[in-house]
Length: 69
Image (cartoon, rainbow, N blue to C red; front, side, top):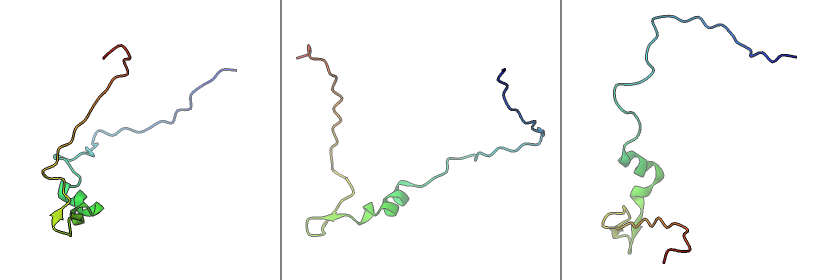
């Protein structure tokens, strides 16, 4: 028995058009914040906006090396 791939012929035309756009598409950060409701988060008796401003984020990338002190 010999395995043979199944092919189907496709007619290729030379007038194909690009599916892309000349500029990026998608949502803006403000649209994403609104879609998930992040723009409605409030703290401290509803006086502090929970938008993450004035916050510091620390990322620690630790390796598992028992010899490293």
